Length: 174
Image (cartoon, rainbow, N blue to C red):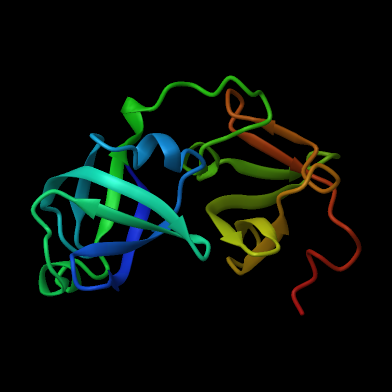
């Protein structure tokens, strides 16, 4: 399974620098000089490898130079490109409370009494924090659950289970 570690937002300057929206917890590793990035345009299966020449942070984004992209026109052609890694190449997390997004997707969501709520379909990253997008078992609607310990006290990848203790009103259809 491919995991997105960055997305090219636009070009920066005239020398081919890329503005990359980072989607990894380890940008210093993924975008280190000499690292190989697998680039894929949205809605395409084809990938192309790019070698990082340099990367620096700027206004909450990463500015990245890659081999073979030497001017604004070439950089603009990469707008929207996704930099991806294969989930099989990722080492297991050392932190028992840290999860890759793909590990959470598909897990069953239950209340503490065992009532089935639904299934995690996606992990959303917002300025306010992470949210679990849950497809409700009863009517298929989307429920957004803040991914914080007070509301999500238990995650068991081995059991395929997320246990939630939602505040009043979180599961209401309105």
